[in-house]
Structures are given as C-alpha cells and as structure tokens.
Length: 286
Image (cartoon, rainbow, N blue to C red; front, side):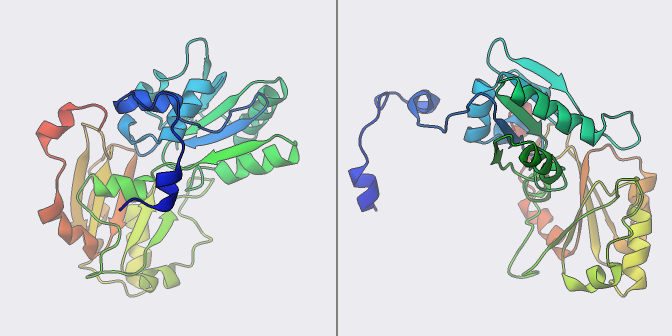
C-alpha cells in the first residue's frame, strides 16, 4: 500500500536510473571536513556493509580501519583517499587505544573527513564508545553508522536465529575476555548462567572452557548446545558444534578466529535453517 508520504515525495534527479545507479542521486548526509564517522563494516562479507557505510567510504579523506575489516571493502574507498591500519587482535602487537583516538582527533582537526571503519558494529564490543568520548572531549563532531553485528548476522549465516519464540524471549551478549585478555572478572556469572536461555559470546574461543566451567557451576544445563561459528559470512566459514559440558573441545580444536559463540537451544534450528550452502560461497560479497 502506498502511504501519503510516499505519494507526496518529490521526484529526484536520477529517478530514471535503475539498480544501484539510483543511489548516486540519493540525498545522503553530508560528510563534512573535520568530522569523524564511526562505521560498522559488518561481520565479514563485504555485501553486508550498509548503504550509509558505503557512502562514507566514497566521501572520506582518510580511512582508519580495524583488523576485522574485509580488505575487499577498502577497494570501495574513493580515489586518492588515505588508508591506515589500526587493528587490535588479542595476543598480537596492536595499536594502543588511546593512540588510535588521538590520531582520529589529529586528522579531524587538520580538516580531514575521517572514517573510522570497524568490524561488526562500532558499539558492540568495538570500543566505539571510548573513541567517541575522546572525540567529544576534543570538540570533534562525529556520526555513528551502525553495522551488522556478528552476534546476529554471523549467526544467521550459520542458520542460527539469535531469538526464536519457541526457545527464548531474551538473549545475553558478552565478551569472552577483558582488556588484559582474561575471562572478565566483572561479569556476574551466577546471574548470567540462568538469566537467559541464549548467551552470545564474542572473542570467547580461547577462554570457552573456563567460561563453561563457571556457567556449569552455577546450574547451567550440561547438555546445552554450544556452537562456534568461525569466519562468519565468509566463504571459509566453519561451524563447530558441541555441548556445554564438552565446550573445552572448541578450544582444543584450534578453531580459526574471529569466531562467535552461542550457547542455547536456538542452535537446534540449524539442522533445518543451514542455508549458506557451498555453492553460495562462491560469491565473495556474501
């Protein structure tokens, strides 16, 4: 049904174009010099980048990107744009968070249109909040462009719905390690163990055995399914399935990272919903 607003919308230049060419005339927000846009690149597949994120890539003077950003996405930057790596990976030499934030401020105050490109979503365990705090303190204008988080989109590529009416009306998202690389001490594991039928964990493969022990000690069902999705949404995606009492097997299996972990019976839908067949993985865009 056509709404009144749709019927009254004035025609725009390029309305006769078709397909993606119609976006060339779309009235995207202006990316102004001296601004920083924090953009989520999605869980991995380049095709899961949002339209606003693609627009930012076309406008930015400098792109500061993270380790989990698909290199294909960087091919969409505008000609002449500078591209800088500022990735952080556990256990590997990484840029300090404060230095990254200061670099964003420096470039913005030099009049650049700065794109901070992050894997997944900037505000889901991506330190986007910390960077925005420093930008705000420095008086630098910024915009947040959300991305598809692997805890939702990545699981979807494995045929696992994050929520389903037959299994759960809530979900817990948590990180598997703190800033020191250890199991987060600030998490109330007793509450987490029983608060929701589904737990989605980021960066948790290395500590999964220890986390499982904590959940079991506070009454979580040992038979609860545990599923690990490595390189979610990419052609090399790999899925490992076990149970909570055998979760240490995931750590022992040396699964490739990045990976997302889901605990709960939503994984049981995978048998019927596993749609990402091998012939579909021939398309690198997802």
